[in-house]
Amino acid sequence: MGPKTHMSASRRAVVLLSGGMDSATCLWRAVANGHAPVALSVDYGQRHAREIRSARDLAAACGAPLHELSVRLPWLAVSSLVDSRKRLPDVPLAKIGRGGVPSTYVPARNTVLLSLAASLAESVGAKRIFFGANALDYSGYPDCRPAFTRAFERALDLGTREGGIKIEAPLLRLDKAQIVRLAVRLGVPLSLTWSCYKGGAVPCGRCDSCKLRAKGFAQAGVPDPAR
Image 1 (cartoon, helix red, strand yellow):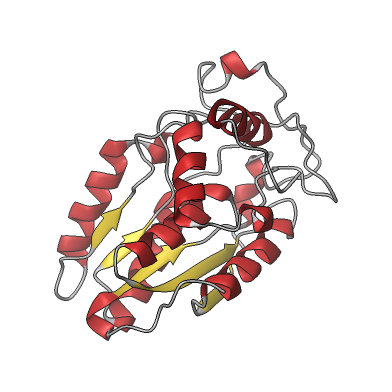
Image 2: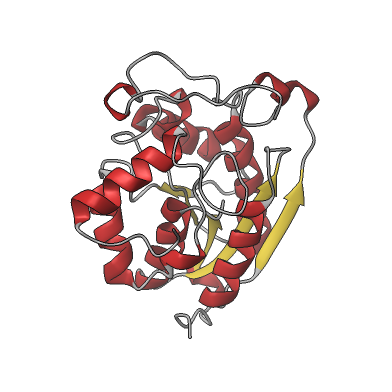
């Protein structure tokens, strides 16, 4: 049974739910903080649909309504996360996030996703958007930095009817081990999450996301139930 999410409209929060461990932790964190989450999952043409299925399973487990969108922006195919013909990076763990912005970066993805989340939030009266950005154990994407989150929140004050929509990024300054421990404390069903960039029946173990996830579970001393 997932956490109870039936609360007043004044406690509504939109949660960007990719299907990965970080966004799942944000969903459960929103509930723990007393919010009634409305989840949003976006198919923007990424290499596989595996994470979308995970988002559905997670929303169902939490008891949160899920909005699914399909957005096709053909120019996003410059990213190896979208164009399956491009090779995904396979670099040593110690070099992840230190060699410039990788080919998996999707142009302005978080700007697009947060804009969609803001539209949903304004329409349902939500004053919080939960967003699983991380700026410690990450691949170096510019739209995962704290300054970006702060700037987007300011833009929402100017660009929405009433303003006051806050961007909650509770994982922003946590490493992956801390995220794993938080997820366990919150009771996140980690077996339902999917992090691999490649897709398939089992995680590839070679992409940045797989390596960072494995590092987090190893350092937290917790077995990964999704493997």
